[in-house]
Amino acid sequence: MRILLTLPSILAAAILAVVTAPTPDVHIDHLSKRADGQFLYTRGDTGGSEALNNPPSDVCLPIPGGASHASNDCDATAFVFADGGCQQLLALVGTGGCFDETGPPCIHAYSVRFDWNG
Image (cartoon, rainbow, N blue to C red; front, side, top):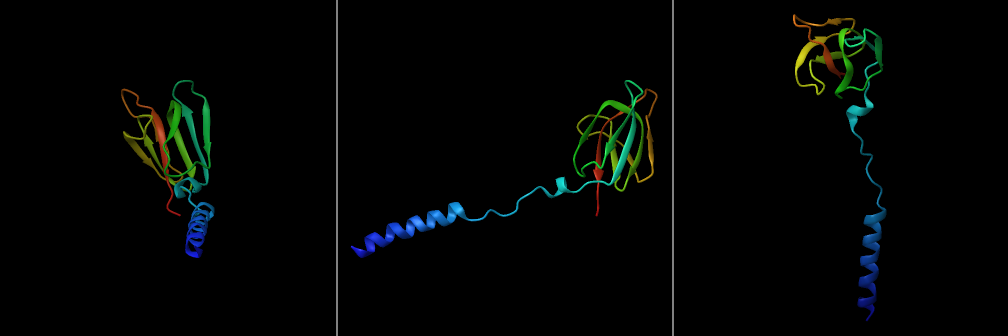
């Protein structure tokens, strides 16, 4: 009889230990890393100036309206793409570098991804 009462107590304790166990600190590491600085660009559709400030690294960032010109004042290399999904690489723009639309015909940049190696 004593064993029967102990077994449910052990099972309950095991279940409680699993349910209340601390979870590991899980996070997506690349989202916590950011390029320090600004990626400045001229919109291809309106000619207006825009900026990405301290953009996250290893994340595909859309460039609404496309960029006809961009300057990378971040501490990370900018991978500039002709499509909105970071698939068609146009240029690598290092720190302090610039991108100008290619052509003819003019091809604007529609997304960018930063590679941070810190």
